[in-house]
Image 1: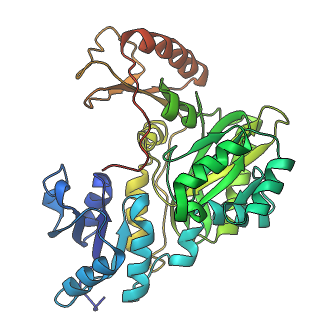
Image 2: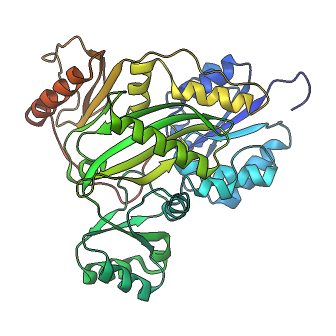
Image 3: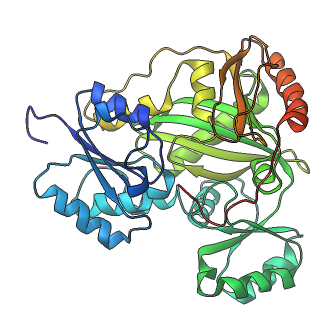
Length: 401
């Protein structure tokens, strides 16, 4: 960046998200470029904050992306490149390395995208993970299945949520799936299925230090809701509870071990029903989806997209200061709905701060100073949603924008 010139940030996203990130960059005086897929050219982006929009075909090969951004850079200075969505992170890291632009490179990004790499690194850092094996050597797979009790999970190494995941109950079932995968087998891992409760911790990291972290618990585990349907919920954990303190400490150890310099993270953990211990599941260097960022902002006043933008713009040159926060409690309840535009007028509790208006979806953001009140409302609404709204559909084999 030239002295006195505004910082130029190229935001890359194959999905419609990150509007507050873009707005914040503009408020901070940046020039903002957006690179998105062609079908989202006219989506609800904050165009008043964007200096130039570029589009690309879906599933554009990395080489084509490098050519396109390098061509644009002939006449435009680019100081930062940011992936607003997880599925663009690897390509953006490759772009940074090719153009020699500061930010997370390919080696570090693998810890936040590749489930095999993140498990191996977590285990090296002394953090418990379920037993796992790379789907590569068949003798190693046979040894794993003879030693680790079934069922097992066959997981793609670089997907999110439950996309592409299969529960395997016996060895022959695995070999059948591997026959279908063919040359794609090595992009998977096989993992012990550990029944338990699932949690997530969402963090702000500045200069390798976790400066803000909020711990939450899901209702039904996300794997179950994505594959079997039903009602998705997550809520702020009681802040003084021992499980909250344990989760926050494990999360700090994890992020220190992974070497994240700055940004936001969404990490998931499981507490085993069998032994009561916490196991690391996965972590992403992004804002959590499914309205999790709205839950955090409702409870604390901290907007993760906004803080991420501040960190990217400062990028170590300016000291980062987390804004003052509240210590309320919040939750989201969300479901697919049979109705195109569900009528929620019968739900009148004052704790409802936001009604989610999304086609064939129903949901609320809730807020209270009492975590028990939040839990009571979630239990009540989950039952009512089942009869009033709930619809199901199969989980996709790959993400769709």
